[in-house]
Length: 284
Image (cartoon, rainbow, N blue to C red; front, side):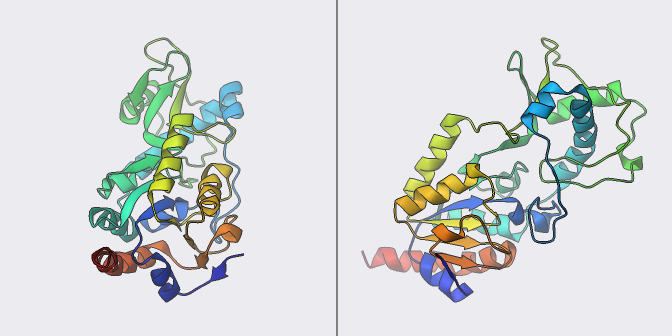
């Protein structure tokens, strides 16, 4: 079982170590993207891959609300937590980031070594021919097919972490097909019920192996796709620190848990850890 600690405990546990970082939706809440599973989040049932591919009504509803949601997500900016991780990477403290988020805010903050575990909101893929197109290009197609659809006029919107939004009035929305083969288009995002591509998983395992410790920031670790890296680090007897508001499914594997916000915690670590790593390296 892990021990719940203070910031000083977190600092002591991570000092002098090179870190692999696993991030979740809680990191992006300060950028205005709500968390699926935070302590104050309303219950939500995300669409599954099976629903998306088998039910035309589900698919139409998804694309209508995504057409609203992606406009919000692409306007969001990195917060202090994202920028702190980018600084820590630049200083050599962070070896890389595995993110469960699809919002690309790590890249926007200038982090370089990022694995987008669950995909990225700015691309769309055809399930038939494999054509990849930008979400902006698809937006133009959807605008042309739905000239009377006015996202800014829809009142019942709840932006969600996957560039989704909840809208009731979707019955008349027209979905775009692949412009190459006429096949089904899907966001380049790993849905519930869908597997993360194996090469991406293997690269993430290798990133965990590269670090001296694993820092989890803003994730409840509810789904196996993220939890497996905590288990992997635990099997390798690496220190594991979890910074999250509330308990997580990975707490029993952690060396230390710290119930706090990610922006303030990571910003403080970015101020203190580089010097501590430099001191440790000088002593070698």
